[in-house]
Length: 162
Image (cartoon, rainbow, N blue to C red; front, side):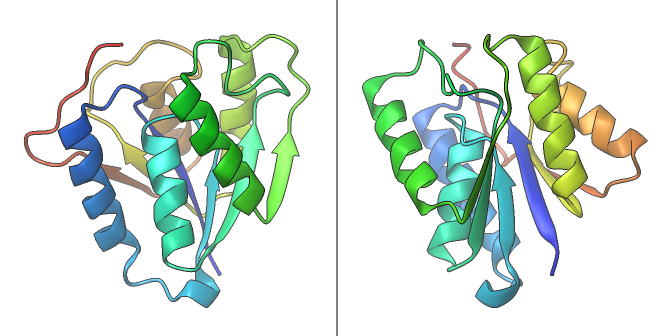
């Protein structure tokens, strides 16, 4: 039973979030609920959309948190509510010990996701990214490790830049 991990952009426009969710539902459709396990950091954007799609299909969710302060002080009230709901639904939660949610904490979380995963789905526009711990960094690490990567970026998708 494969474990599918996710990486992706936080700053999806509302229309993009809807099209990404549809694309994730289509991507996950071939996996029977009993064989579906998703691994996510539950960050806003792609991570949360993926976790919701896994749970909607009846799959199991593994949460990998970069530190006990995740999702961080910049999360909105709506993002915190979504995070709490997904965290409560997770079958297993692995919280890493980072006391500061900096790039090193996200790199460590990505490394843990890659250790768990048989496949990585990347909600990614193909850009260079924002450095260590970001989406492009995670895709590069997965490819270097020989992990299959499925890039998902619907036609017309856009980021908000926030």
